[in-house]
Length: 262
Ligand SMILES: [Zn+2]
Image (cartoon, rainbow, N blue to C red):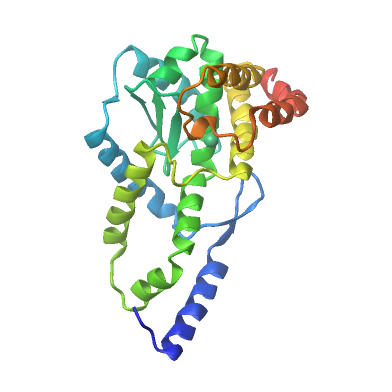
């Protein structure tokens, strides 16, 4: 698309305004985040995306595995900073070591991940990590970052009022669902988000009554599973490395234990 210079500068101005308007301070971490999706849209986005996932993947919402994940998930979500999200925990029936969180509190754990952790405490570390991603709005932040790359196009759409908020939600939800089923491979969480989710997740699991030391065991076990070879989905990505995660968790373990012993 060719734009006249004056139109271009108007859009760049709009883009700058958009960036300024979209910096928000996260209430839990105090970190400044760039998010163009309003919090009010998270729920609809997550709900729609989960619907899409259910069409294309074998999603279990009941049965033994799902019940186990839901019992742990609901217990942790209840003591999180956002107990009132429309939380949903499902199991995806695939032999994959992965888990993900969509905006608004829609969380999926893959069957192999559930099977690999026979202790609830280690599974709680996985689920606590995903709950933290949802509470901290990392999905919305990731999407905002991706959309920054198309900012002029988005700006043009906004400028001519090309789409309503509902249409936008529907389009984004379809895109999000395909990313989710692909394990977010095209849109990995940043290193910073991963360490944040480890940290807040450990606090949440401890507050919910799960021994936070299991978070260290989780990443140690992940290392072993990885050494077994095979594909490495996002959950196992090397950014940050497992050793880095373990070191960070051990460093702050006294803080996590203080929540556990309360
Ligand atoms: Zn993560």
